[in-house]
Amino acid sequence: MLDVHGPTDWLAYQRLTAGAGVLGLFHDGRPIPVAAECQIVHVVLDRTPCYAESGGQDSDTGTLTGSGVTAEVLDVQRPIRGLVVHQVRVTAGELPVGARIQAAVDAEWRLGARQAHSGTHVVHAALREVLGPAALQSGSYDRPGYLRLDFSWRGGLSAAVRSEVEEVANLAIRPSPMGLDQRRRRGR
Image 1 (cartoon, one colour):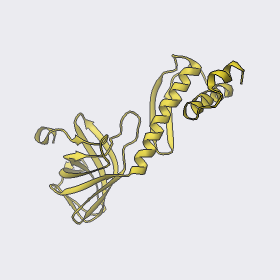
Image 2 (cartoon, one colour; image 1 turned 135 degrees about the horizontal axis):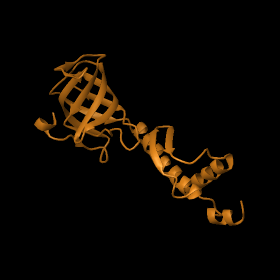
Image 3 (cartoon, one colour; image 1 turned 135 degrees about the vertical axis):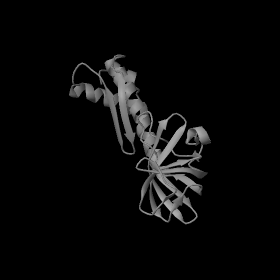
Image 4 (cartoon, one colour; image 1 turned 180 degrees about the vertical axis):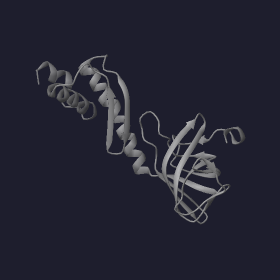
């Protein structure tokens, strides 16, 4: 795919919709010429606005629509550098190789995933402020309404430390009129 068509034109940072051509369809790892209604397949497009799972942030959801076809985007991955693959469920019609479609990201999903991803950075910064530079992130998973930050530490965090991390994170996004430094000097 990549050798014949080159890398996917990845537009996820520029837009939420894009016209695209279907370069390939795969079912159970094998190429197919057309995807039927209700079938779940992997689709390679020449260009996409869809964010592929990366850096702990879940992939976009959305739709592919074209002449007589609608498909729901379930997952987006980059199995190799330069290639973006969409897992879709055809919800109406048939999706053939060569079709021109409109790829559209679910804007609310994208916003929620971005917010969760940003929240992970805030929590990581708060951990490092409270625990010190040894509190290093070792993974994360972010999707709308959910974030998980993995970090290594020498033991469980006490309720007091968790509360302090929460306060530092909250102050980073909702600063207190008094300010964190003043609160710390006063002993809270």
